[in-house]
Image: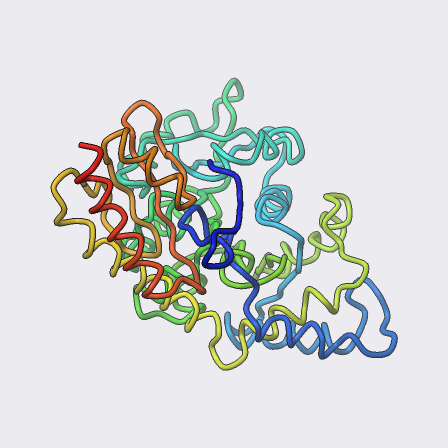
Length: 354
């Protein structure tokens, strides 16, 4: 990816990742609001407890939130809480767990991953069932967790019926359901669901709820309902190097995210910008949209010369070097003007470079 630089018009804008976006001003204000006086560390303060109660309101009675630093930490913590050494997690072959966490599930959690073929990032009941043929065989690792990424790494979204079907299958086979929700807000915004409806009401047993990709400085939350899972999480969080000493500053960010539905406003805006981008570049000759645009990402194939010219002006990732597929991600702070300028640049590069 091209190095970050400033152009004559100000800071560079791009479509590389929602991780590349700025911090939402309401989140910065929330951090500043608790930067007063002293408070007990490690979450033993009244403010953090208040935000934990806010999570229970958002995710349903009995829900407990455990704040961590990052998404890999959240996912590893979920696997450690659910799996014994001989157990495994089924996930999509595209899952962040499988492709972008540096082997942390295996190295830190000690949990083997069983990647299954998916359709545009979404697992099907048939694909999951095909992974369950050696239950009770002491020579084979035993599936214990079904991990579903919502929205997926390919920008697609499981419908509520699909989630319920997969959860029913997993539970019937004695498995737990984990939602890797780094972009759960975008999925719920796309489906018109609350956080509770899109997670626990849809059959999840535990959730990695993302904040960093939706306007936070740094912070994710592991959310569970089962008291048995909750009992182990404080100790596992500490062992997994995810316990923040100044916890109130993580909690403050989630206070802002859950207050006045900032999570929904930001995610819905990012989704709308992706739809705007797809509508603008999709009809251009030389652009082929490769995945359904259902959340805040657009995947496309464009000529190599056009990719190179565009990356001189905008940041984005080449998703698949073999096919030339690119990924354009929109964020809470993506403006219509950003989308329109990028679409115009795509059209210009297509004309000049092809």
